[in-house]
Image: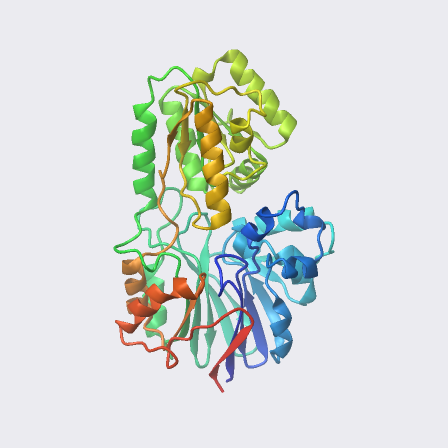
Length: 448
């Protein structure tokens, strides 16, 4: 069976992920993502109102014209998890393909919300839920399986396309977490089985984000203990404490809500994306928040809540807000600019339970946000976080488990691929033989 892989997006940057695998006459697309930094550098861009061609020209979504070179029919569009760099272009591109979007329940719900907000295209692809551990047929001779992985969002999977020539494992994005906070550990046992079944693993497509960092990525339980320590250290402070984290990081939000209670403060979630992700997780029974936890996304509702907090006393509340990357319209950025009823005083604490995404736009915005907060007297706690991506030891373990014949580094640019290539060469792989360095818009013929 001919096996061909099109590397469409996410092979020259971190963002706008999209990869297509052709096995005979059947094609599966993995991810359709947005490069948010290419949007944020423009003022007041509303992507939901824009045409796909304009977004492609901006470098914001994948240029999928290479799909016309693949001879076959798309059988499924498979986002691995609900981050925008993996689902953000589905509303712009999925309607071009007569295929269902297949994902885990939490991811499907987030895709559904993306489609409801789309105002340019009518996307009516079927949305199919499939949980980790389940499989579906792809054509007559292939099968797709979802393997549970741990990441900085719940319900993430690595899809595996089983073909007569061996398995194609799409490895974006994960960390090797054996003690996560709200979900099951990564299913390493299944990865080891896949590496030794039938024809083994023909190709492994891997996220290289932290490949140059030594050791292993700590568990979310480590971030939880760090956060608890910080929260306990400010328990006796009688002024304002504000926290921010990734809205999609349900495990972290859960910990913040719990620790707020422990130090005698009422948590409240503020910001559109905070309300969206946490509300969705609660509605689908992934988490069980306290009945009186407030979630407010609309700006007027947020400002009313801020007024109530100021009236009743900042010392009784922990606002958990959007804006950890300094996004211009997020709650924390507005607070720094003095555009909300919440007034920061000298000594008030701002807890960043997130790292800056290492990209110039984010770094600049976060710097500006922190400067504004400090000018109002805030004291900042930062880097209370663990990454959602594998470091060196995790990569060694995955290669040992899967023992793939071919490797395709992804989720970086060429400079970012270098540490992974070095690591793989140390395990006997060679560039142009079984390590395939590629860029957006290329195709790789694995089996002719």
